[in-house]
Length: 330
Image 1 (cartoon, rainbow, N blue to C red):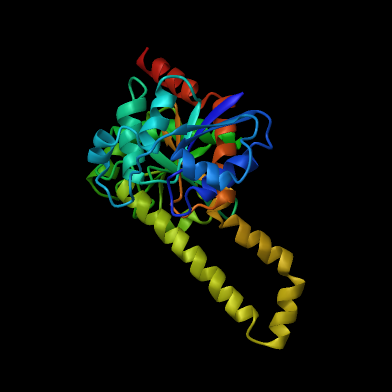
Image 2: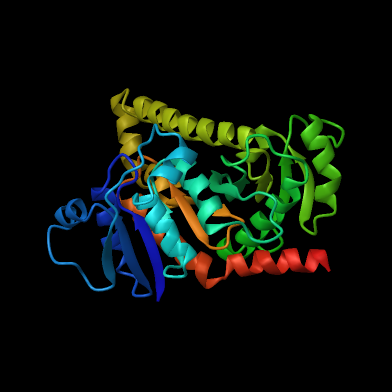
């Protein structure tokens, strides 16, 4: 049984989305769920008896979206985030999912769950849709001021994830840059380039932003400043593009007929850009799995984030990262 803690009070749609998402995820008999948060609110959201393979742990405090992460983690020991992360740390769960305050989740995970020995900095990673499937963007939000030596570890962790969870053999790794030539970039990318060449991954060099959507690499390595800009722009562009397509398809009678005939194709296109299909972003490099779900996650997204944990745990991604580090140090 894979035991997953869900922060029931995190996100814009708490606790309803977390509760409904957890209920949906229980359709997979490999999963058991622990909901942390205000027991009264969670029970009300359930609207019925507590199902098998689910339990509630009361956590009366809530860390708000606008609170200072480190201070909130330190002062609110009975918050749904801190209680959940401590369950993970103490071995009472295999993974933790939260749509709550991103900074608090990342800070709490680093302090409470802790880094794998040898990992310089954990990194947040997301799957981005492209013309060929998905690319794994790492780092997408944890290390804004990254050092060159962080990036080879990001590449190694990203490669392990893509190979074992997504099933891409020998994934192509590239560093996000302003040009394809080796000498291009700023101090970070120039210093990181030779380190990536010797990182034991399938490093293919630099990748420009325009080639990301074309599927030019399977793992995209960068600092969190660049990564978060790419992520947020991609989300906004997808929403705008789908809106423009819909507007044009409904503009004339003929285009409406064409839209009707092509509705399955457009439905699949929309699905490929839908973050709720993926669920969340794993925080790689920790002693156990922490997944950060989108703040506006609905039940579908929470359920996807929970189910994402199954593949991660079953493939022992944390253990494989530890093995990689150990082999590099020998």
